[in-house]
Structures are given as C-alpha cells and as structure tokens.
Image (cartoon, rainbow, N blue to C red):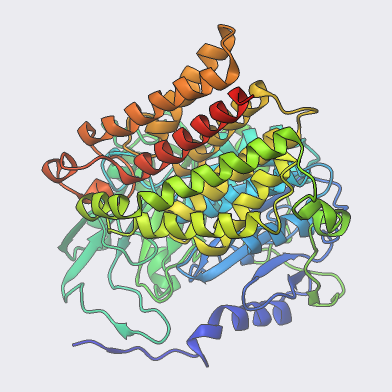
Length: 592
C-alpha cells in the first residue's frame, strides 16, 4: 500500500535550497551564489571572484544524492558544485553562473555524470562559456557495470565512481597542472573505474508517496541512482552472496567494462545509498575486500566506506572498484578540505552568500550592437533573407512534422519548431545585428532558448552557440568560414547529444550537407551553387532516415515497422530550413 513518506522538511520545493543553507552553517569554507531558487551553486570561499589561479574543477547534477556533489567542494577536490532540483539536471544559467564565479585564466574542467540531461545542459553551458572566452574541458563519467553493453547512444550511467574521479582531478588541479593535464588525468581515471548497486528499497521523493514497486523479500540489482528500475529483481540473499555477484559483474571479462585482471592493484569504495546503517556498510566491506583478494587475485590499496553518493532514503549499497597505480594513489592521498571526503575543516567563516557574476558581454556590448541596423550591408541583406526563408520553411511544414512525429515520437515536433521559427521572425525585426553574422547566429540561439523546450530546443541552442563561437573567432566571414561554423555546430551536437551519422536524427541531414559543401568548395565551385547542391544532399539524407533504426531520442522505443512509415521529423526539419537558406542565398547572389 502506497503512503506519503515522513520527511524532515518544510516545503518540498525548498528542500534543496534549505539543504544548501544548512551546509553553509556547518562548513565555513563554503559559499553559495545569491540566486535562489533558480541558481543553486556551492563554491569554495577562497576561489570566487574570477581570479582563481588554478584550474577550477566543477561537477554537479540533480540533487538527492547528498553528500554528492556539494559535499565535495573544498581545496584539493571540487571548486564548485552545481545543484539541480531533486533528480533533475541543473539549468544552463546555473551552470554558467558557477563557471563564471570560479574560473580564472587556467580554465575549468566539468566532470559530468553520463545522463542525457546532464550531458546536454553542461554541454550547452560549456559552449556558452567558451564563446565568452573561458577555457573549458569536459569529462563524462559512466562507470555503471550492471547493464549489458549499450545499444544506441545512451551508454553507461554515472554512479559513485564519479567521486573518485572528482578527487583525482581536484588533486591534479591543486598541484598546479594545466587544464589539458587535469582533464587527461580525470579521463584516465574514468576509464579505470566500475560500479554496481543493489537496492533493498525504493527511494521516496519529498512530498510524494512511497512506492511499493519492490515487494517484501525482493532486492533490485543494478539500479539507477534516481530510483529507476535496475537490471533485475531477485530474491533477497545474505550479503556474502550479493557481494559475490556484484564483484563478478564489475570484473566480468565478457563486458570488459574495467581493465582489471588478476595481479592488478585496486581501490575500493563501498557506498551507502541513503538509508543503509553504517554497521551494514562495514559488514559489506568486510566481505568485499577478502573476495577481491582471494577470489579475484587483486591487491587492495585503499578502501573507502560510507555514504558518498546516495539516492535519498534508498536502502542498499553500491561497490566501486578502480584500478590503481602510484599516480592514482598520489591523487587520492593528497590533502583536501572537502568536508565529505571527509577531512577536518578549519579557517574563518566568510560571508555565506555572494552575488552572481554577470557575463562580460552584458557589460561590454552596446545597445546598438544588439539591435537591427538602420542600414544593411549586402551581406546583412542576404542574411536577413536567408533567415526569413528558413523560418517560413519550418512554418509551412508544421503539420507534416507533427504527423511524422506522431508516428515515431510524441507528435509535437512541428509545433515546437513552429514556436522557434515564429520567435526568430519576431526578434529579427528588433534585435538581430544582421551586419554581424556571428552575433546574429547567437541571437537566433537566444530566440530559440526563449520559446523552444525539450530536446529540440537545447540541441539547436548548442548548434547556434558552437557556430557563433567559430564565426566570432574569424576576422571575416566567407563561404569557408560558414562551412567551418556548420562543421563546428555539427560536432558540438554530436559531442553532447551523442548521435552521429546513421542514428536517425537531424545530423543525418546536416552531415551529408556539410560533406558535399566542403567537397564542392574545395573543387572551386561558386559558393552559392555549392550551397544549393549541398542542400540536395541534406534532403536526401533526411529522407533516408525512414529506412534507419533509431539509436537516439524517443524513436528508440518505437518498433522498426512504425519507424518505416515516416522519416525522422527532426532531420526533415533541418533539411527544410537548410534548403530554404541555400536557395535564398543562391537567388540573391545571382540577382542583378
């Protein structure tokens, strides 16, 4: 029988902000940005101000996993933690605020758990920060060993192994290493670690009823840290048997998730999921270490036992095993003031709350530069015509997109794209600095951000931000620079969204287009003719998605028979606006 859980909270909507306030009262070395409730960022009190002299290491994600990640902010570990709502990715503006608050000339490393939302939101924030002049690198951590090798682009989930990666990266940054080296150490660490969890109960979100999904006498193997179902439900067993099964899954040579073999040295973390007594965690640890040594032939260098990455009030544990060497141990043993590593904290209490830093662009850009010019250059006129053609093309196929999406998705692709197109047309009349190609592309992204939700909105935001950053770095904008901007935008969407050619997405229209455009420009073709020819490749690529098996988005849940009834609506939308732009450019360039 389901019933509302008892929680020591006030308003469930304020649980995360009140947690942060309590954290400030407990640990004087921490601060938070004055942006509640939208911006929830915890940072080192000695690193704020934008003049931090070392690489900033930033992690974060949805709340509910405490002490992760705010409890690991401190000298020698994280410089800042970005807190989302419970089990929800933090918004882009919150991530950007954290980057701006602590990133100095050495740059920053974002450590992101491998969940689609976290990848997309941290990815867009990274691109925005780069366009503002910050040096940013990203490392994705996916240490889950419970699920079979991935199908499509989802991949392994980020679990408690992320905490070890945070510590290694933080120690490398504290040692004064440059951004490239800190990122390399974090990436290497992420490739050496594997985790699997076991739940004895399901977690309960504040203000919601307790689920009875997991019945009496049952346990869930390979669960996710957001309460999502695991790999299998099984009869509850003594901890000896559970530990044996979990270690075999992590160290399986069939999946090959971790490069660990007999004779290697390892580090072990036994992690409580929120409601597991320390006694039970220590009992579990007492079974883990001997089995690693005797059954798997491994030397155990370090053991960490406690609640490091939880799932609210879930009962259960996860085991993390990381291959170790002297370099790994040096980073793990390095001193840190992160309160939940844990270590003692000292120092005077600074103000707990500081203002959110504003982006430099808001201060330095004049009103005139962000408004429609009174007089358009020839290039500005062509850009205006092209944008108008693209928007109208999307408006004209709204119903077709919805119809296709109704067969392979949730039926709103046309409506979502229509909102974006209308916003672009409206904002272009007032705000777009059409004589400046880079800033105009950036403004298109802001128009999309204002009205387009869901995955389509953030994908096009990333697309525009990456193109903007590429164009902004160019002294002049010719066909070559437009091609490079297109390639940069495609690369960013692929990097943060995980898709590539053949995955049945908008990239199946844009990748063939960019390849043909590059080929024809290199052959010396007239740019407008090359552009028009590439738009034919975009349309052909989009139409070919009807015969592809989906490996990204909601279409992955649709049968092959249903997919064969319609092309991918996102690809068709991309081909439509791309072709409209190409034909508009060709007509205006050839006009007398």
